[in-house]
Length: 473
Image: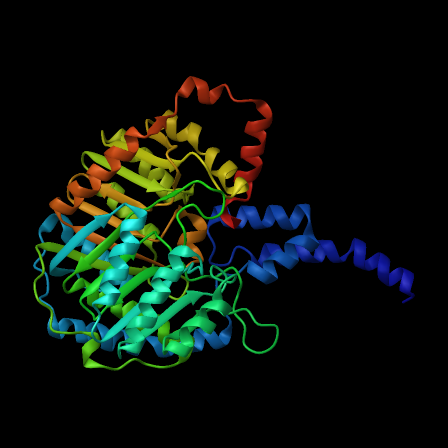
């Protein structure tokens, strides 16, 4: 075969071979919508599709990472057993028992009574409270954040960690290698000499064991002495970082047995990065009732094969009787989630979406907007928050269930990111979150159907094109 013939074969036959291979490989264990998006990319641009599919097409970690995950589950079971020994198991009312059972089946964490929870919405106050709790730490401080910056906010937390480490408190910090890439080296240089243990999550390396750049740990967790915990949407970075709009967040500060479940997730993530199992009875101190809230932690991500947080969202929407409010900066729903919202309205449930009017991801924002018309036609009310960048992720169902966490309501967060949520089966908590939602709804503009449909043809086309690739965003 002459070089000319070989080259001709490469450019004429190989693309069809790639397309044929895609028809065989892509649909395997993949949703129909994602399959359609991948096949469209393969048929329009087979070489580009092949490169992207090899890089990010399969939501699995490398083999070495999967072997480490297999070692993780016995550690998780030991952690949960430690929690069970010191916490009072929950006696569940019938209306929440099925939801709690679903959450337990996914994340392996039981619902626990006796918690006190606070919802923190003031950005600087949240950092103040975290720094104060670190200053009072006696035994250990465990932090896990997708973004941990060495800016004004980050340096306040770093100073608190250094002070704690110097007085003998064990301090460990996990940061995502991509989310914190600009600051990771500087953070290590400043914290490690003081005795703070710093570890990057899922580092990207040219040589040696590397991780997929698109599979990230998006969690935000803080645990102090096993007694105080933080969970939610806020990273450790200045509120107005990036594009200048101040971030609007919701964090939960928890005390009580549920903090042990946050601890178990940190212990698991620490093991995945270091192969060091943290074994210390001080990690899970005897649980004292701090309040009356019934709570449960739900970790989710590609390492967890039993299901995902999207299944919880769908189940909660189907269980709603009066009202559903969902707040998220990015909204690209799965088909079951979209259908659940539409059915809820037809059942007489008031469904409201609280979304950000601004976005730092233009293509994602276009794909998100492509869903607005069918949601509005179904009777869903969409509110665009304009008093800053809405970065909070939460859901309330009637006045009975509140969910707060790190997970956006989009396909990427459901399938590719390691996320964490706290589910509170508590009327007081649901009412407190409802007050936050009402306040932010008042700071938002409700989309007017007529005005929305009057947007230009070019805009509609751009939204529809972006939607074709929404499962890949």
